[in-house]
Image 1 (cartoon, one colour):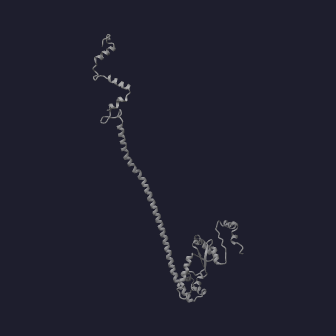
Image 2: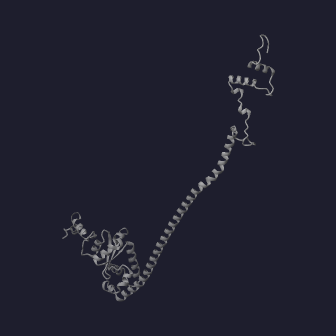
Length: 323
């Protein structure tokens, strides 16, 4: 019944039916494919959600050639070929997926090969392609029987077509093998180049890190001798300036003398008269006047009499007399 949505009935409202089945199967994924009597439509439905451009069936080989665009190729094949294998099991056909350029390349080569044979027309080529024989290897595989039965070719002409296509198929096999080897070599070289580039980058990074570590280690070593050279000179100059600006201490040895000998300059001990107050200047003058004579052992007569009078050893002089 065309009015019944078979897929919707299996899924249920908001996926309730299919969800129960998935739960019972332990989370197993389920694909629902709409069945159709046409093998081409059934194969297209089995490869969904990939969009199929064309399906060519070859009943003699039991193979279905499916043409999909480049952006749909990975979706049609599925992860590790799961989608295409499922479609093959559901439909019973050997599914071969090609892109439009690959499909056209095989058809054009078959057309060019058949036209080199005498007696082959374009109408015959179109009939052969309509049988799903889209490559010279297909004709070499099916033989002359389908050509004589389906296309109504003479047996001699069909044999000549098969012979010519078999020779061309060998060339195609060699070319494909060389192409695969070149692609594998290119992938290997690309991988090797990437590994070499990664190794070079890693080595450069290691060298840069080593250089940075060496610079950081050399900086303190270079700074230490400079400090060791400059510091004594500066300290020596500062010591000399301090020594010249201060007076030697009481227990410091004078230059050229023994440690017990201390030399003091009179100018450094006795202050100048300018630095003294008037009272201190008067005391200094009186002190200088009362200094003893150069010879302390000799006493003046006048001084002796004054001393004796003061001690009461002599009588004081009479009034008007000088002592």
